[in-house]
Each structure stands twice: as C-alpha cells, then as structure tokens.
Image (cartoon, rainbow, N blue to C red; front, top):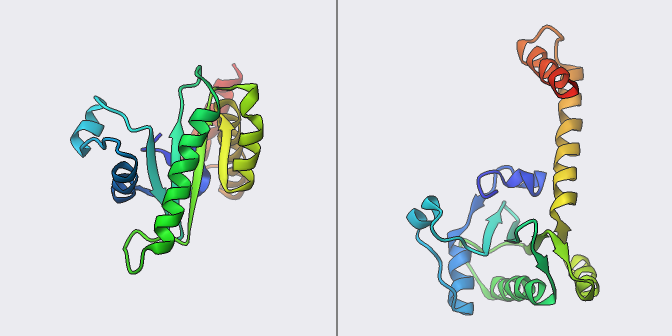
Length: 172
C-alpha cells in the first residue's frame, strides 16, 4: 500500500513516505522505527506511516482485513494524529510543517463498542473505513476515470483497444 497510496485515497498519488514524521511519532511514543533497508526487506513493519502533499500530513494505520479491532486501536491512531497536530502547530520554519494533519484507519471488522469513537474520529478528520469500502471506492473511482479516458480518446488508439480487450476478458 505504501507504494500505491492512491489505493487508499486518490489524492495521494504523488505523496511520499515521510520518515521525519515517523521519527517524531516514534520518539514521543517510544516505538521503534525500522531502517529503510529493514522496511524494504519486509522484516519489520510499522503500524503507521505518514504521507504528505503540499498541505497535509496523513497518519495511516492499517489493520489486517480479518482482524477485529476496537477502541484501543482507534485511540492509538487518535493519539498519533493529535500529537502531530500539536507538534505541527508548535513547529516554526520546519520543513515537515503541514497546514493540516489527518488520519486514516483501515480495518477488517469493528467491535460494536467502537462505533461511537469511529464516528467522532470521522468528524474530526480521521477517516475510519473498512477494507471492503476502501476497495469498492478505489475500484469505482478508477473505473469511472477509465470510462472518461476511453470516451475522449480515439477509438483506434492501441491503449484504448487494450483496455476494451481487458473489459471483455473480465466479462467472460
């Protein structure tokens, strides 16, 4: 997902992983941040990573699709986001300062006791979405975009022909 952040949100196409924000969180919450080599090898995985565009930093927490999560997991992301928001407001002249800090929590199943917290976090700029919703949104968004591209391109363009061929294969 880190290599294809547009799967989480189409706005994140050009974002880069911000290790400096990882380190801020890691230092404050006393968690270990793996080196870039350890991350590439997949030996250790961060529970969070930060993405940013010119105006936003986003703390993303991904849980396995089958996992049942509750308030404890949601509060962990809430703590990260609120801490970074406070840190961001106090930073002056820092190259990682953002105009806003957001959060995104993706889960498989949510305990009933956590629904009120989920709703409050959503109102406060922290998206809390199940994997199924995330995948449906990504598929729909990209399908709609491809339909627009196909309608505007010459029908004999080999790339459009290849897309049409893929559509027919999917129908079979």
